[in-house]
Amino acid sequence: MGRPKNPNRNPTDYKRGFNAENYERLYPWAKKGRKAFYNMAAKQAGVSLNEFIITAIEEKMKNETPEIYNEMMQQQEKTALE
Image 1 (cartoon, one colour):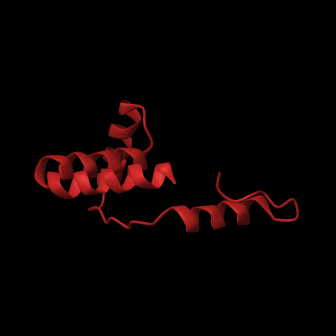
Image 2 (cartoon, one colour):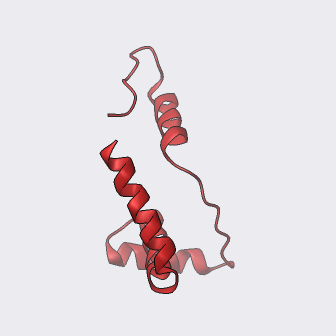
């Protein structure tokens, strides 16, 4: 699964390459002082801030744009089967 590890490659470079191939970056901006509260909420929920944000986005999509959410989930299932 994924790329084979290259013993001559720096582990950090490998992670960066893997992430570049498999993830997209989002850059949300928050008002000053809110990040600390977002971090506290994520910690209380027992997840990373990233997971907390992604879950919030996907819950909002599911409730407000179910057709787009369903399309995204179908695409994810197709990708998982490949």
